[in-house]
Amino acid sequence: MCSCKRLVTFGLVILLISVTAILAEVPRFITYQGRMTDNAGTPFTGSKNLTFRLYNGSGVQIWSSGAVNVGCVDGLFSVRLGESPQPALPSATVWAMDTILSLGIQETSQPEMSPRTRLATTPYAYSSLNGGGWLWDQASSRMTQEHITDNVGIGRSDPAYPLDVHSTSSSGDYVARITNTNKTTHHSLVVVLDTQLCWSAYDAAFFASNRDSNSVAAVFCGTSRVNAVSISNFGSGKGLTVGIGDWTTNPAILATGGLGLLSQTYYAQRAGRFELNQNTSGSNVLEAEYIGSEMIDHRGIWAKSAPSDFYGVGGEFQGGWRGVYGHVNPSGSSSYLGVMGEANGGSGSNYGIYGTASGSGTNYGLYATAGGGSTNWAGYFTGPVYVSGFLTKAGGGFLIDHPVDPDNKLLQHSFVESPDMKNIYDGVVTTDGSGYATVTLPDWFGTLNSDFRYQLTVIDVFAQAIIAEKITNNHFTIRTDKPDVEVSWQVTGIRKDAWARTHPMAVELTKSPGERGKYLNPDAYGLARDKAMYADPDQSPEAQAKIKSYEESKAACAKLATDHTQPDAPCKQTKE
Image (cartoon, rainbow, N blue to C red):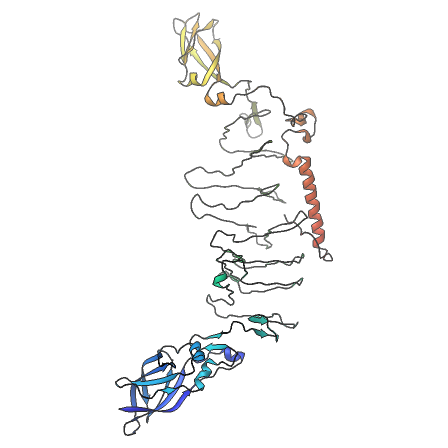
């Protein structure tokens, strides 16, 4: 049997109080040396399987190395406790809270050696208490501060916060700088609000500056694969609050990269909210602008919400004057679109543009004007057009390429009009040897029409023709005084279907008080457009006054944007 005589109790790497030492890799083990002999005291040469155990002050085992193969030369051996593949040594808290720790050693086939050896002072440098409550845990590579009422100050002798960093130097670029050279997905800085406060309205981090220029915080190295800044709040509070009191062009947030700024929320909260308290018109609550030079169709704003088919609204806007305003200032001769609506796919009904209007006055689901060009169309449709209600017009007809000279001319005809909802049917028929002919009409004719009118004209011969039998059961009879006479016939009827009965057309209408003195076509009477009943909404006196005020405000803002001598400038130039 061999016995172990302890030559050196413990050797240990001591934690140094310097930044360089903290950044270096601190060994996470205890070096133990001993001398192994037999019962006669003869030094042993060879190898043995030994198990090392640590016990707390109550004699309870708190750590075991497991079987460790130890080689002896002339009885001497050395082993590192806590070195892989052994389990890691206990956490720093154990060393700080229990100063009566002891070490036990057992050869695999023998009982544990007695007595155990109490750990001396040196091992406790592994978890130095000289920092006023700061603990270094080699097993987890962590430095902790147990006393939550203590504050640490850098650059000041009276720290008011758990970590209080202060600098008055003008030579440095940063008050504090954190650099992470790891190229994986590790973070350089993470700010976490305490779990117990996650559902309150506290800010996880607060950055503030009362200077006119320079950054409150600067974050670099945001690429297409990583985020420059990632902020998450899983409660009802704000993910990010940014305020700026400077009226100049310095932005509260300047974010660049593949994803300049990404805001996410997981509950029924807003991923982002922007508010503006401004008393002068012409300011923008949210402004987006592409300022590059690439000849690509970049989007000023791109929004998407399509969780599944038939769900999601890409964008919703509400204004007290205009809900949405699309504006293009062309300088060339291409085709330009102020607003474009598109719906593609599916097997249901798609609407490229859908407009509604309701109120107690005059409502327009869609209002369009055009002017100033060589050709002007207030509305141009390619394909069939259906109107479910009344279609009223000052005039109309068809317009086609001239059938004789289509390259150079157009041909147009006027519609046939009537004060009634009149339908016209006609045809040609030849009477038989007895002078009779029967005209059969469609089976729906009598259901659709009433109040019939007839016209008959004989062709090629002098003869008389009459209606021998009026329309009955969708047919009528013609009689001529000669046999085999060709007759051209025409029948008209007044609509009596369900829609016509519920929407009767009044021929003469009295203008309402608000319409009196105004005209559908004031230009036909030599009057200006302000006399129009259904004028361009921007031509009303109220709208003209608003537009004038709006343009004046923009001009004032443009002047203030270049005048930095006015710190209380009330607005910022509106960009279009």
